Image (tube, rainbow, N blue to C red):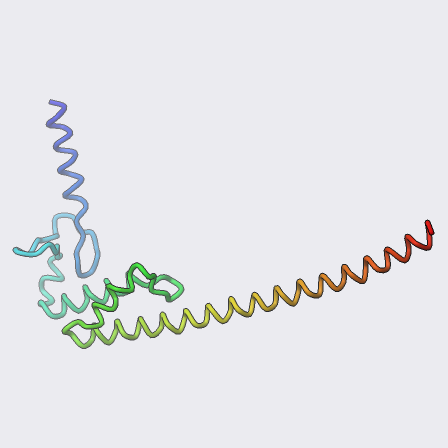
Length: 147
């Protein structure tokens, strides 16, 4: 009895975890599986046609690889480069644009990091000079007082 219950729970977890490959929505009892593929599509996306489904699914996949800052993490860079050689020109163009934006964001980030290091070095030099002047004054004061 207990095994049957665990089996049913396991089967339910597998069934509820299906989402549409194209639009990403989780729609219960509407998801259909296309024969010969691992993609699950909802009824609305089945009506779109093969090319439109591929275009929307791949563009959604591309945008999932980009962080909110506009970076493509190194672990996803290879996947985006592969999609840059896709047979659909829209998908390859989108992948190239994302890689170009990533390159620009990385340059901006590196420049701002360099600027921060320069400012920190300048602040440290100013602080060292101030401490040196302060210690000279303190030394003169102590020499006059106890000298």
